[in-house]
Image (tube, helix red, strand yellow):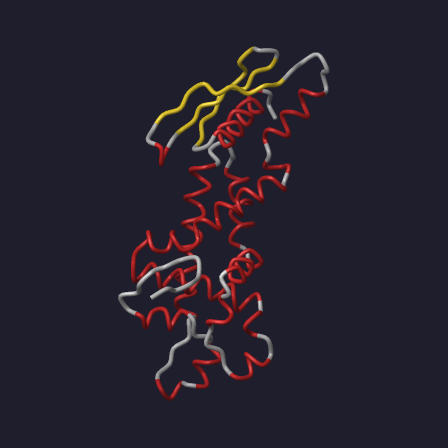
Length: 225
């Protein structure tokens, strides 16, 4: 079965998907039938989401210190981000809501949709393992991380380094690809950052942009920034 427009996965246990989409209001109205809400799945999904996000940004943003990684993860897994993701896959139309909750706009309520995303993640994890869960949301995490980093100067090492170098008009800042390795689906790039054609530091990453950020962060650390 196709779960969502952007993601196809066939549940071995379809009851897990139904449970993940069942809001507590619907479960309450149908408690005589033994219907269960998605709250327990949401609990598990919260941890799974945190792990997938942490693993990704730890691997991709190697130059970021622990404090900045924590800020980045928080920005990605917050309610507003999950609400954005839920809207992009029209999750609200699939939820099982009580009559009052649906009439009150529950299908578009940020907290309801964010919780449902976590519940679906848990259902996928239980049914298909971490690969299924990651496949559901990793593309969104990647894009969200890039947007957050681009929009927050505190996380943009290249911008910070550029501002420092620009204070001395006689200095020029450039980046140079020093090497690449690995298969096409898992390449690693090494980039050097140069000031006045002298190598100051280098960094690695799974893309040239990430490697440049890593090199800039290493340069900032050498400068004591």
